[in-house]
Structure formats: structure tokens, C-alpha cells
Amino acid sequence: EAGVAQSPRYKIIEKRQSVAFWCNPISGHATLYWYQQILGQGPKLLIQFQNNGVVDDSQLPKDRFSAERLKGVDSTLKIQPAKLEDSAVYLCASSLGKGMNTEAFFGQGTRLTVV
Amino acid sequence: KQEVTQIPAALSVPEGENLVLNCSFTDSAIYNLQWFRQDPGKGLTSLLLIQSSQREQTSGRLNASLDKSSGRSTLYIAASQPGDSATYLCALPPPCATNKLIFGTGTLLAVQP
Image (cartoon, rainbow over all chains, first blue to last red; front, side, top):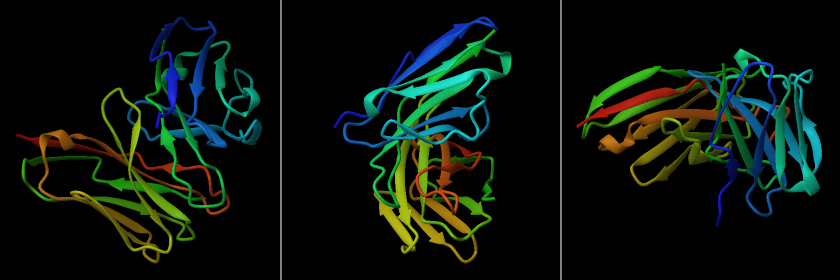
């Protein structure tokens, strides 16, 4: 079974530039998550999709971050414009999303450096 | 608000030693708890998922326990190997949302050959 795919693996941009990350979840997984992990910290949820609808985006900085999930499968996360404090690893995860107690599976992450 | 704490933040042990990693949470009304491993520069690999009705789960040399009443989970690693060196994270859903995770800050484990 293929895992969660993310691209790119690494990205370096200057502040105020734009960047986009892509995620392809495990086939059949209804729930997709984007997490931000700053160095030395645990991941923090940015946004959660159930199929193509947003379930939770309470911690997404909506003035600069946006995300969409096309047709309930792939998802993109965009930052525009980027700030230095956005430097982090952006992790995509997916789960079956049916009922409770569903296990989450993570991709390799995209390491973003803003200079 | 659920808060998750992991102690110690870092641990170094000689190869072959058994060790225990700790995870504490403030709200005992949880549905499950998941342990992950993260290698440097990599994503998270799920190790064990314990349902709220379970007290422990085992996978190979790993054993995870859950004590909801005391708000604690432990990850026991038997006969540690240098390849076990990584950051170990515990995570659990908040009481009102079953399908997102709140993470601890992790324990960085180094197993010395």
C-alpha cells in the first residue's frame, strides 16, 4: 500500500515570496491533515479536511495561509507571503476518517526555509 | 484544553538497555493514544495505537501502556539498538474532536553502540 506522498521535500524561499506544497493521501482515506512542525516542537494542526470540506482550520493563519483539497483527494497548502517564522516542516497526514479511533499516517514532510 | 507533556526531553542509553519513555496528558477523556517515531529530517512513522478501552499494545520490542485515570502512557523499548535512535512523539485527540491529534514535544533518544 502506497503511503502519503508529499512534494517537494525541501524548499528555500525569500521572505515575502509565495510557496505551495502538495499532498496525495493514502487511497480511500477521507480525512486529510496539514501539520506545521517548528524545530524542537511537536507538530501543530493547521487544517483538517473531511473529503473536500474543511473540518477545522482554527489554527491556520488565514491572512497568509490557504489550503484546498481537490475532489476530496489531493491537497495543496499555500503560503503567501512567507515570513521568517514560517520556517518549519510541513507534514501531511491522512486517516480513514470513519468513526472514532482512526490511525493517522504521515508523509515525509516538506522542509521550508524562509530567508 | 488537552495538554501533552513528554519527559525526558532527551535520553541517551547504551545499546542493549531497556528503557521507558513517558507521556502525560491533562484530560483523561481520550479516545486513543498514538506513539510515533521521527527520524531526523523525516516524517512520522506510526508505532502503536492504543484504544481507550485497552491498557497496552505490543509490537516487537515495543510495548505501550495506557492509564487514563492517571493521564499517563509509557513506551517501553526492550533491548535497545542504535537503530532505535530517533525522536519519539505521543499524540492524542482532544476530547471534542476524535480525528485530529495533539502532540507532545517528543523525547530525543540516542542509543550508543
